[in-house]
Amino acid sequence: MALTISMWFLIVGAADAATSDKDVRPGIAPDIRSDDTTVKFQRGNYVVVPIPISNPTLDAGLIAGAAYFYPQTEKQQREQPASVTAVAAMYTGNDSRALAVAQQNYWNENKWRFTGALGAADMRLTLLAQEGTTEASSVDWRIYGGFLFARLARKLTGNWYVGGFTRIVDASQRIGLGETPTSDFDTNSEARSVGVGMTLEFDTRDMPLNSYSGHHFKLDALFNDEAIGSNATYQSWNASFRAYRRIRDQLVLAGEIQACKRGGTAPLWDACTVRLRGFSATDYLGEISSSAQLEMRWQFGNRFGLVGFGGAGYSGDSFSGIREHEPIPSYGVGLRFMVLPEKRINLRLDYARSTGSDAIHFSVGEAF
Image (cartoon, rainbow, N blue to C red; front, side, top):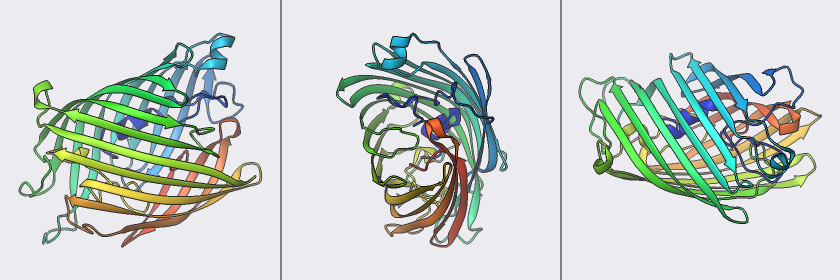
């Protein structure tokens, strides 16, 4: 959900960034200290990287990220990624802004992992007006506040990890309507969410930021309760499965299936979204959602690539009621330029279409 803590946490870098070409899993930011590139500013273990972004949710903007990678022994380098402290600031053309500090630690031969983030955001967004509304087709929506996230995970066996996490979001929201809209979501001006949860993950991807082979499954369950400080008691369930297959040397087929469920009265900013391209993440907010997509990726030359993608999504018990229980298509083409070949980090430019809308998406890293 682009408006939940998961979205805000992404401002510290690519959450699925690879940290080496060995059998290690993702961290907050890819360790690019040894990469020979002009897109970073580096002094010792300190790295600063500017990240341009553009999408229909936030408009065009820039993320300025800085990270300190902790030194490792040769044995640690073979067994686990480098621990890192990162800070990032974001500003976009619709006057959205965010600031976050994050920490990722690995220890005991990568059997244990800790991820934490603390920050604040002020997001200036738009919502599709509820179906049947005689006013404008969209309304302004502002969310501002602070968040804290902490996750501790342990390796079970093989490529399986299990963990627990906590999330606190103390947010205010303002919806540009004359009266509070009718909704099953919490649209009150103050929407504090405090929850604890569990996560289960299976990951065999060769390089998570741009996978050529492997599978990735993740299941998160978050329980927010008034007894521990939440304004309302509700549950959040999210599941995803991704698969990658290298058909030829320069051709990769990638697929993704996702599902989301909210139980109880969740804040509107924590609603399920349809995570596809071609429209704003705020267009389809519902208590349930799902999506599936395929992407064919062709790399030609040393650095350039082309992709074609298509998929469909579904939203139920939605805020706006638009395309309720109807297929939501997404399809398009994209251009890639590999700025860091050693880590397979691409600049991504996609043109996507959907029902009644189209959009340009520009960012660092693949869509999935």
